[in-house]
Length: 550
Image (cartoon, rainbow, N blue to C red; front, side):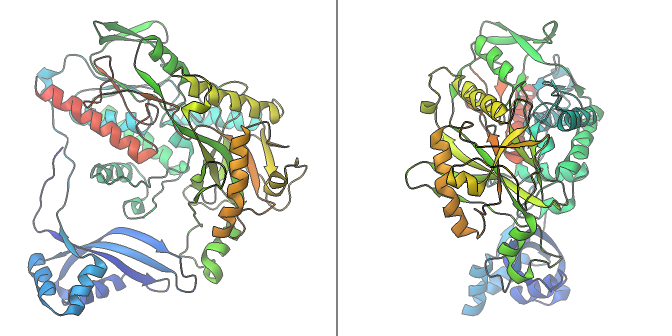
């Protein structure tokens, strides 16, 4: 990977604001005014980021960052710096600076270097992008997925939603694209890594909406990410890679501390020198197999909690005030966090505007919740996870996989509380705060599929988790009026926010078994689509460099 400098450089201008009734064409005038040049001197400009500022409900603004191409960019900035205090103030206010274009480049490996193809386990974001990069390098990787392809997987998930028939190998967690295939397709991340541009461009070329490249909180939507993932798969195959479904890694052959063979479906053996483990955070049987084969695994903190649902339109009214119905305004989002007075940190996670709560179980007789939004985000409800941190001391054991058993315990408790039929236990916020069972819904319908059972959530999570959430709800209500609306719905349980383990690796991203590279969310090194994809690209770069040195 290297940066390629193209001439001329761009001038980046940040914090340009437009009112709701102003068209984006006005940017052209504002750019000229800020740079103190004629509009005719602007060759081109590209919107880098677009964000919404709704802090003042009477004056909601869109805030832009742009890269401007002009003939003499360095001279223009120099002139601004020399001029009056007013223009110097503009430089500070708009963070005006020169930037150079960055292009992600994947080097090609000579064909003679390749004798045994790298194998990637898992087709979630980390595995998918690792495989794509390896394929672009000419390494003909083999991508192995225990679940089914997207189209077949959709049918299995629908069958679970409608008839409560769970396929433990094809569900919300397992299958092409990983757990992110049935989510909101959120691409928001705080990670500042140049690889993000390549990831976004890949998704766009695969059919994702173009605005993900500029939106400050980009999302693809569960309906559109499915097509994008299929198209990336086809690109991998076009480049010489192989993609196999319904193939589960069941054992390893390790010789003198190095991987030599991978065993699939208990019988098929494939020779391998580089095995990338992108298994996701729910491959519990794979964790057990890796532990048996003496990979170094450590416990890791994670979070558990509940899903909360509100009416989408009510949230828009609270967030945007009288302008809430303006056609330019998207479904309202929020991100909340607090330290409760007597318990633990509580925060919202995976907020799905205009979305749905869905059953995300991957084991029999368990209930797991997750959130999902389509691209339009036009559902009647919005939901998010309400999560509380848990730590290895909570697991009750020092075994490396104790966190898995901790998750499993509460997922099975939720299954029992829901009626032992894959219904999720649910409770109204008002009843939850008063510690009494719920008997009927009011004005907010429950979206959870396959269905809910109104009850008390007291048996579904540890007391310190429930007490922390009870303390957090009034605090969040002070930040968003109506957040603890008595009619809002709590659904349990959310246990798969991140991996409960970390598969230890060194600076070269290898585990203690040479040739095995644990990556992504399941290995404990990422959280979300973009950070997982970045981790996948990093390991691909290391393997590519390894082949280039042969």
